[in-house]
Length: 145
Image (cartoon, rainbow, N blue to C red; front, side, top):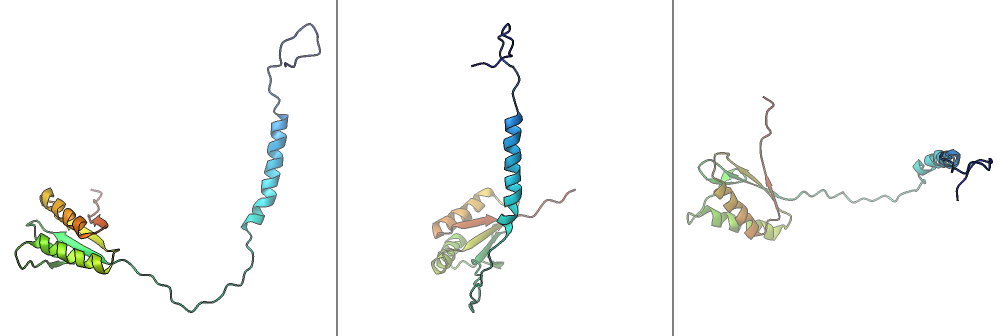
């Protein structure tokens, strides 16, 4: 169905879009939103009950593990003493004990940049075997030189 002029000699369709209905609908929607927007920001006054309990803001235990350039392991900034000489076995036992007491233990791993990557991967593997779920790497930010 095409719309044309009243002139019966030309039967070409009208090529212009009538935007008046579109503008009318948009103006009505704009008015509706302007009227209802302030109603959405108002709140209903409610008298809330009082509670005497203290809020619990427990943070998970954080264990800091460090590896220096020589490969020495540190547990919370103290050297990890290994009685049988294998520091990784001692680390795994201590991490497993920490995870057994609290399952939300976070481990932060700091390693010297001159250390071999293999030693860092071994510590990560020990943490995984011990049941650590959250393992993060601590770095220093770059200076804008």
